[in-house]
Length: 191
Ligand code: 5GP
Image 1 (cartoon, helix red, strand yellow):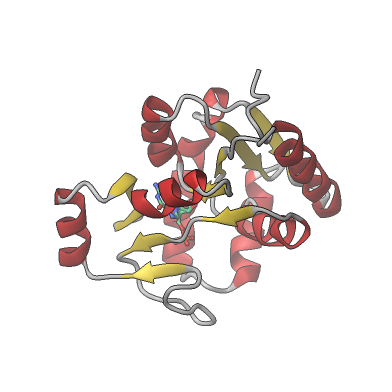
Image 2 (cartoon, rainbow, N blue to C red):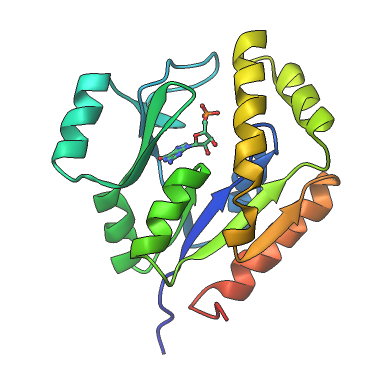
């Protein structure tokens, strides 16, 4: 019997640790891939075009929106972010499980069209901890961090729509939980 590939949507406030958790869990899992989004935000130190994101212009992004190339897209902190539909569908058709790391507005759009997907929300224990992680990460200006903290408050209101919540106060435990959820759900054991 062949197992059907699954789509996983992972959200969580900036600083919740979701990018690190996803990057680390992928090292341990075969047959899972993370979709690479397109964004109009500037490339950060240490990032590479085509690796973390496809960094594109606003015009290009809007053109792709017009061509319905995105499975979902949203504006976050003044920039556009979108998931390339073809990449996701080609991978799923080839039997590869796909992970989307996207913010909540995008996740709500995916919920409308992909009811079989599995939705995971990652949280840090406190907002103080969130701010501290963003400061430590050192990739955003103080003004950008404050903007992200305001968005985080809004994002937390959406966690009730997700199938599962992973609390990241102990990194290794959160990593193991994420791995268990991904492996336990693959193939459509959603409910
Ligand atoms: P960052 O600028 O920190 O890389 O990402 C900002 C937010 O955008 C994060 O919550 C991230 O998960 C989200 N994001 C990244 N790619 C996408 C996407 O394709 N669509 C949506 N809706 N959000 C995305």
